[in-house]
Length: 182
Image (cartoon, rainbow, N blue to C red; front, side, top):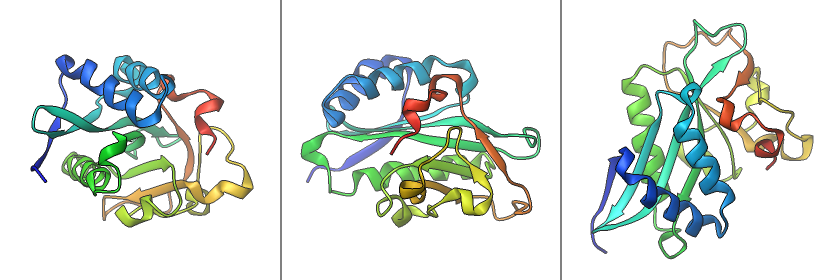
């Protein structure tokens, strides 16, 4: 298999990003959400990465800024959403490469926490802990009890004060109840 390259995106990559999102999810909803997050000033600074195989974009990941209610100045946090891999390249480790590179960038930025609402067995492979609410972090909208493990957290700063907890406040583009259902 040809070597996969992970690169931070630029404005000129928007069409490639949207193609990956539409292909991965088989619809326009995630592509539209991604575009809205990329344009959302409350999401900045954003970490947006594309996986390339040759000249083709085959995967995308997006991390947007989040806040912890009542601790906006003390804690730095991000939400991971969405992660998209073109179907023929799924199950080949590309999603993990994107997650790891994004976390590495956030660690370099001295970010404390990353949250994701996602597959309960996939994301823990990359350091996420199931049921962020058990650590004191509630999602922007209630997560039903039967899928509570899908709301996950990763501590990426070893010096993080674990006595801090609170509701996660996402960027405006993600602040809709329909985005918080697993």
